[in-house]
Image (cartoon, rainbow over all chains, first blue to last red; front, side):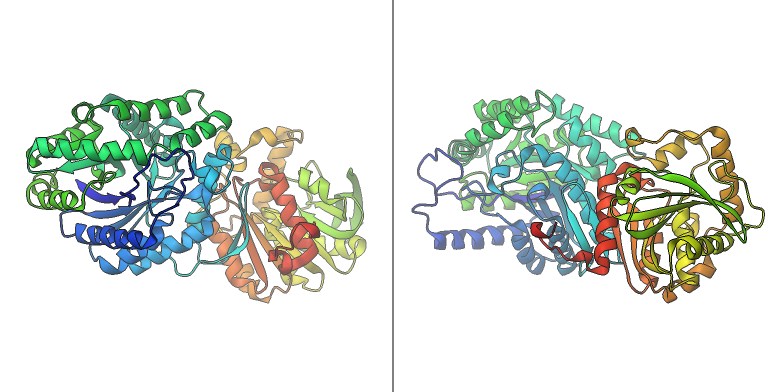
Length: 374
Length: 259
């Protein structure tokens, strides 16, 4: 198995309960955020020496949930400071962005890192569409067109133009092209049938997160495999990535205690302001074209929010415990979901840096040696 | 504006052609399926006089045994243009028609002003691309959005005759090396159009033309298979009209007030 040290770069000191999204920055000290960037980037750089095969970052806007409005900037720093780990950007929110710019920045990162980019092409979460004033109902068609355009940007040596539904560019020839040929591996979300279709067509790595029940996740993986077969290929574990929050401590009790405290901040403070904005998008747009998908998305979040740490472990939603327990939980995921890639968020909410660091050490010394060969 | 079907006697034989519209003349050279008066072609007549000659043997016209190669057909087009169209005009080709259009531009550089090569045939490197033999697969290769077809289907006899005539002229050439050698001498400002879902003409063909024609641009039309005019009529027309009006300058975004 391969493991991604995934970072959301949360702001851990928000001492009020934010009531709206976008979230006010009143009273926020940017020099504190400078220190956080240093702390977080150091964790990510070190991760490649702690048994992690990938280091990962992602994109979110306008709230303390994540301080990476442009993960490519962080990836640029990682490209220089790491030497082995793949740099997984999970990912740029393509429908919100200029796809030619994404193609250029991703290609730069692939070249700067010597061909270590894993290119995440994500649709994002509903409220982000308000941030960049993009119609949520166009999210899927924009994702599809942007994906195909970026691949052309990477693979066409001769200049070309693009005449599409959402994008028109008369003359493109990006410099440089990626080192990886024909292009870097693509990673996309495939949590439901609608998205699985396109991910299978593009032969991308399928990502699945926010697992509320292993049997539902298993069905999504099986559906993806079936769809991929209809496009003439058979996914392997290397094509299936599962995202989980994780806490590894010396004992089960300590890990559960830390996770419970961090999740309280995660759900009560970081996730809180997004809910009404998400409701607005889901209620007044066709972000999900299937009638019940939006409702399911919100139910899934609410279910996860309402469960204890123990219940989440049992459901396969998170990984938490002593090294021995964590190994067992990882083996279960591997067996149930046939996944060869785990996207692990160690910095959950306001999890203290010392707990994150201890978790990394335990992963390196006790967990990775037992699970890397799975 | 509607098209009229007319005929003209030329030194090489009789030639039928569709003509419609008024304005700067455009010669449209058809694909191996014969002339399809597609939506963009009809719309083009608003500002152009569009001539669409029918290669003898296509679309129910009488065959001409003197036409053995693409160049023979192009010689006939050149005579047609000289007699009817004028000394200088724009050319739009579709697939086999683009192959023909390239020869016309290579052999008659003074005639061709703007050259638009839609899904150009004649450059199947390593045997890639081509039309599947199976009719169902062929149909899928031609259209990503068959529900957009507006023209009446041609009869099986006409389709068979079109296919036979095309095979004779194409002479099983995968890559037209003679034409390839002439590409650097093409003077016409050229736009190469490709469909992102086109498996008949692979992207390599467009890249080869772009690399070798001195003043050329190429563009992918998103979500179009081989029949770009049918699959994405608005996008095709936008590119045609913009390029015919502004040539290589079409790459400049002039803002909404220029529309």
